[in-house]
Image (spheres, rainbow, N blue to C red):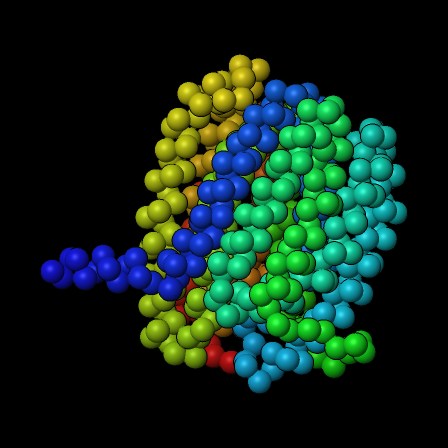
Length: 420
């Protein structure tokens, strides 16, 4: 009877219900992405994959400077009495930042194309920048939905955009549009978030621009911007180094391994982490409840995700040639190494969210800076050993350094008992 009650409590957790919604959306996404990935693997050359990697890398970096994560996290973490003012400032601040990022990306398109010695990048980079002009229209709504723990709405947005984006990508690839298939699918399906979030969240921006709470947002969001920028550096540094020193063909193989390995695993983890932050923020003023929620959630994440990662790595030699074709067999060792590197990231990511929840994003920033320096030096040393050497270095550095950072962060948060 006790065991049955324990299982009922486990599956009735609000945290797991939110994970269930996001996980269902991610399952839809993975099924749809499988068709897209297979289509791209059999239609794209290694150079095409390299071009796609460059565009996605640039978008990853650029979205950091919209303060997308920092503003959203502040809205979720803020006291109820502060939310209204923060939302109004956040809305207009995002318009300012996103407009600047749009212009900057268009201006640097030519230098980036010259850096990679490929003029095919210029126009796709400029067109992809149009997505930034849509972000302010739904970022505040999306954060409020997460704050209210209505993540089934977030899941609906994810699933709807995934269906539209993957379908459109496949159609455009079949018609021979190559890299433009990725760009147009991204631009044309982003408005789905605007329609759904405005339908299910009643908040509306003021007609007059206001920046009354900008200092508060920038203080919190600025530290998170630094953290997220360093995360993007860590997540894309191997691409930049491989593309510059080993060429776009080598980058194409490496990026394929990422999509077929790390991409799947990180999407699963992102499902859990997206639900974790609002879940622990709800009780951050109650030390015992806060600690219990964090630790129990982390156990659930580990027990679910780690076996999936190990299974994926074990089966890679079987499913890669069957699903994606024999020409990608050389990417299998890289896929396995990158996939295994995800395991230590679970605990580091959760610890970073813990520090944000207690209003200590600056501590996360210092830790991320330290790790980025170690990671950068290690990758540069590994370049002479090719893409396999780079992948092995990614695994080794993550396995050795991140557990130390995660352990220290948890002791810091719980021993000090910081509260707003």
